[in-house]
Image 1 (cartoon, rainbow, N blue to C red):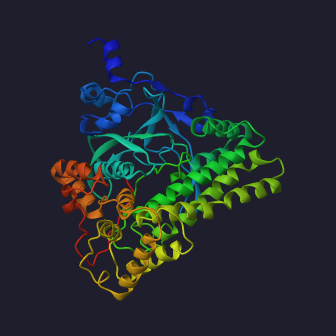
Image 2: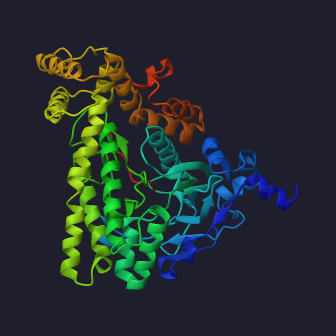
Length: 491
């Protein structure tokens, strides 16, 4: 096979538009080769969507690219600079263990970042080794692909390779590199970096690039930067509502982990809630509950306020006027979020139209679930199937009274009961990536090099709304334990 034929079969069609931005926003980097890379998993469906050749990607030359040992044709590896508020404290950051190879242009003309995560040191590593352990990379692969199947905007995972090296954390762990696919890696923190360390013109370049890449319908009007802010507010209101409806807890909603595209990004100490409890926190480092489940909407608004601050010099020449403009745009978030959440929750209860008392009906159910420590996903699954669980909650007088109100509400709408059930099936996943199942898959992979557990889990999670027999064993919550489940930032 000639080099030209191999390139054609591989399907790489890379652009480097980010590398054409002001040089203060990134640093070109060299590859950091690893000794003996091995392909662990390849997302073949995603590869085909990207226009890539699956067999070439599985070959030695494809694995070398995933390992950062060589660049695909047309790549211009770089590390992006950004800042961020981490647990409320502002700091300089950047891609300390990742490199952007370029932007793949798909056969349908879409553009996606191709990034290697865990690919070695960069100028932004701040003393770190730039590497990643296998467990956290598999975790991101599982959760991000599950989120995509749930219909939630997210970065995707194309491949995971082991490096043949050990990484040293609290213990020796097998090293790995994740190939991540994203609409872009532009973050709130990217704008914070530009606003703090770059010139006004460089900030404007970044804003114009973001509009062209993610919001091309924004017209060249009097204040396109205000429209950018408004559109980002809308996307985040929609995204966070989707998180809340499936019980997803991001775990580390720092401003550098909020993507301007409206995708979920950076799966570190994330997890899905089993028992419904609004104050749930999984992250080992979130000791004060800043990023608890119930706090995700207000934290999203806080992050958006930090984004708005970066745009102030672009919104108006007069700072006071710019602040007023930004505040008005931000004030839309609570109602946008509420409308998205309420619409989604109506769907989970099979409600097609809106009535004034719907919010009370929903909140009353959540209060009962909280009181009886009901499983969030399985409660809505049982309502969907009209199969009451043998539990204290379903046998309680509070639930019986609530159910009567709900059934009366269903009768008042024009749609049939069959249509309501179909709506509920489309709105309530039968399975989620339950924490104990994810840990089971990671443990088998890391400790025993057994990837069959993960592959079975991924297959079940790929069709979460199908309500199949294969899902039954995966819907069970974990056994009761005195130890609360903890997650850790991927290192």
